[in-house]
Length: 305
Image 1 (cartoon, rainbow, N blue to C red):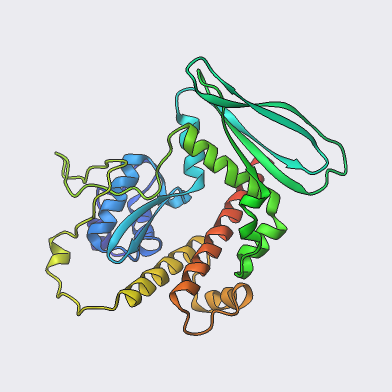
Image 2: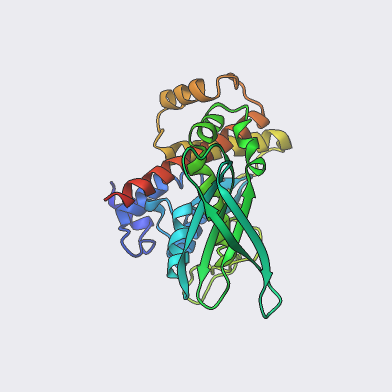
């Protein structure tokens, strides 16, 4: 790696990340960012303490706008770091289980759920629902309860891999879905879809302002570029969706054109050579589900060590 390329990203490394790691991030998940957006992404990663190498955070560029997204592992880690964190629990309810729960109100007038009974033997039968508890000191457990009907649309998906994962790995996917929702609500982990302000702090680093929603304006180096001719809005959306698709493929470890073609041929064979916007959006949803499954299996492997 040329020394001048390393010098460009000097100061962006933090924590366990080296300058070489920053270059690697730039060439992989950050390849769709312009220089200003990438530096902003790294500044936000540093401010949040999220490691891009560990898939805790990644950038998405849509119609020249930068969106920062945080991975599932980051939600779990941040919940564990929160004061009062006491863990979480998730269970599935099967059709042969003896299950009963009710709602109560605490002294502050807030409702919470109480499990009266959940006993079972074998065979348990099909899964019909589930629940997840997020525990925080000083508060009643935050509960997410769901019936299978609420996620059945994943199993009926017309996209090959999405349908396969929710059909063949339904229990794992359902539990992870509920845990994510419980942790986000209980610990206020609203990282996704957050945007940042255009201003810079006293040290010249863009400020990280959670929950503010502002457009990300390119710096001078981008403004000085020739302005492109007007583009059809649908075409812009399609190009943005394709760029997002490539980033998701890389996150899965699918990095060559041939491997991408084989993945699509196997899991979404009806897309064709000239996919419409809806086809690409559907494929991106499929990739998200495959990424979730890969992370879930990684978590399972870690628990066996």
